[in-house]
Length: 532
Image 1 (tube, rainbow, N blue to C red):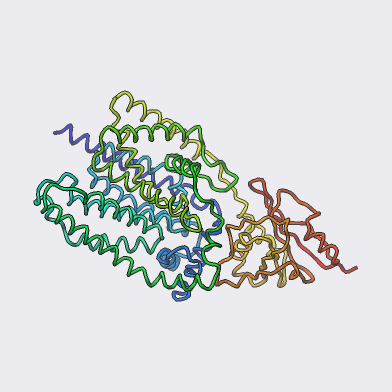
Image 2 (cartoon, rainbow, N blue to C red; image 1 turned 30 degrees about the horizontal axis):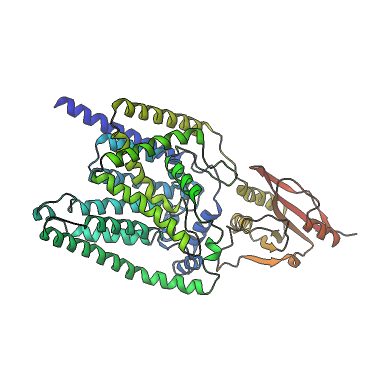
């Protein structure tokens, strides 16, 4: 008994160590880089008054409003410092630990299986990244885990191998209410919350097939009916927001502007997602970064997938079946919807709901490897590769992103400018960054210019709808005695079309302010009307 007690203390200590590391990894360099375009949108939405915030978010079409309401409360409590804003998603990542461990317990995992799954979760690069991004993905991850835990608790009163009616009794009725309320929060956090609900519905259909006695079929049918009614009620509760979004979509270009740039997924997309599910510490931050560190992630992915396949053929217990459903159904749903709908909805950030089930599925599979030596070798190799990836991650220099340059250049221009000045910029991403940097500075107007083919622009970014503080105009709008031009290029090119046009109109091109990062330079160029 004393030995068992020592063993329990050892595993509890192990869980505490992993939990501490989980938090450290998410707090590491939390405020080293500036806000991204999407994060600025989050803060911008939360800065609105309560009534205008909902209409502003509805105009964006692609996200429900709950995250922005929670962020607004967070900002009211602590302000808008970069660290405080980035701490918001970390809090949800930390809160997710509790439902994750409760889910593992409800699935009847051993302590070693729980610890293994927790390690995979703690070191996953995508989860670390989205735990630091001021977006709804960390709350989505947290609420989805609460939902999965309550749902598994729900179906644990409907055991797969039930043989008597007695085994189906004793279910606490308030669990219906908590599961419904959690799913309501989930679908108002992100539309992919509906995919979690769909996964739960699919599992219920699977569990309700063929049973030995009529009484068990009737009882389980009642439970399924209750859950199905809760799904219908969720739909009714979501109708008001769906109506608001439909009204907003009818007054804009619809979802094409939001999703039209996204490619439909294929084999490469699925393979990349599999690698991301297994990638320790690393995640692609921008389009010029490598998608994966293949030398580290390929061996881990091979071991994990092989173990899952072997376990699937050998024996499939209830935990394996449930986590397989929670992993496969969302991925398959996103893939199918992306192909049958006009626009792709495929995205790693949306599928954050499958990371925890996949971690549990992998932990179950590796711990069920039939040969002890093979299991030890698998743990040893995975542990070594995670250690190498961790050393690489924590010793790397902070990365500087080109979009942070606009804030730096705006500060320099502020020092050099004493009167009302216009900045003409040729991309919406940079225009939004400049606006955010200068929103409290009355000296500057920001105008986004279309019409120059040699000015690069990422069409995935566009100025928010129902937002007129940055004007959009064509190239003929560039005028004034003094102003700035803002654009990005690989190097200074004095022969760019806009510069040639301005020289032809009698303007002098001043010495540009520069910010270099990621092989690109952001230029803020002073322009002045020639007196000659």
